[in-house]
Image (cartoon, rainbow, N blue to C red):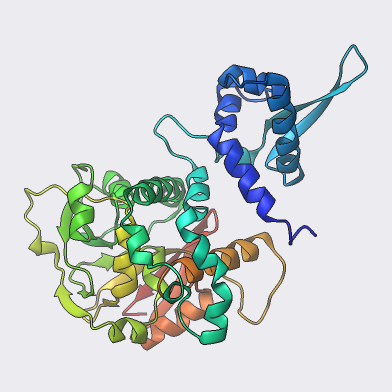
Amino acid sequence: MQLSSSVALSWALKAVVDLEVFEVFAKAGPGTYLSASEIIVSHHSPKNADRAAQILDRILCLLVSHSVLSCLPVMLKNGRVERRYGMTSTAKYLAKREDGLSMSWFLPLVLQKEYYTAWANLKHMVLEGGEVNEHSIAMDECEMDPNIGKIYNKSQYSLTTVVMEKMMEVYKGFEGLKSLIDVGGGVGTASSFISRKYPSIKVINFDLPRVIEEAPVIPVVNRISKPDKSTVRCGADQLPPKTARTNLDVAESEQRNCRTVDIRADEVDDGHIAKSTDSTAYREQSRRNVARCNDGTDIINCDHHGVYHSTKYEPKHSMRNFYQLDVIVMALSWGGKERDEEDFNVLGKKAGFASVKTACRAYGYWIIELRKSP
């Protein structure tokens, strides 16, 4: 029953996000417990406050059952028990910060009505062996929608910031580098983190022309853009592709008639300032590009993947996250696929890398180092 009705959780959570309930808790301060009535009157002016509080209370109960919120029953003078709610460690990531960062941006992205048909036609992918979107909407058209692009930008900015803040504390693999190319670097969030900590590294943010053109200025990062349907031939010390870059098989990428583009650190004039954005165009580029590093270039990949053996399946939280994301990218993108550690080992060895290993972890994301020399 829980699985059959699980859609209720997603929409209940989206309603709470839209009502800015998490921001109410954040403003109230740590350890504060609020009733549904207090939440409503503090942030909204509903037509019927009592009825609104009753509805919100029922929604919040669902979130409590999933440990998104905590609940404290309080006995009132009239003998009635009032439920009061508080933040959990999970809820803190769903509250928007002053800079707009929040993991809640993924909800409106995944629940876009433009994607309904893709989900409804998921069975056709199984029966006919093709892409879901061949039977529904063209993903590229959805990605060009400015509203979807805006939500995608914010979700990727939030995710990258949260992960990179932690990665920069624990990962030392960038030390000693002279140059680095961030393929599909979006707004340059990851590149800016690296540049701030390692100012001696010449960082290049690579993405599609329309992504670079619309991006904010980042003073510490160089920029470069190339057409889509291209292959990346590296000329930097290391290349850190993001999650989606590893979501496409090499053979499939080559079947899309890609043309080669050379990217070298000396190709960017030092006077140029890198601009990029976490745009839906990134995934378009990621699906069609495949890195070819035949000049000794190493790759550092930051990806959300399972580091368990593929023959050992246990119902763990990390495993659930991994396969949930895998189904999402399969349904909503061309050739989307998440990979576990064994998949990366196979791909790395086929591509000619002598060493493929996981280096460190932050919030379910792992740094994977692919090196030409052991």
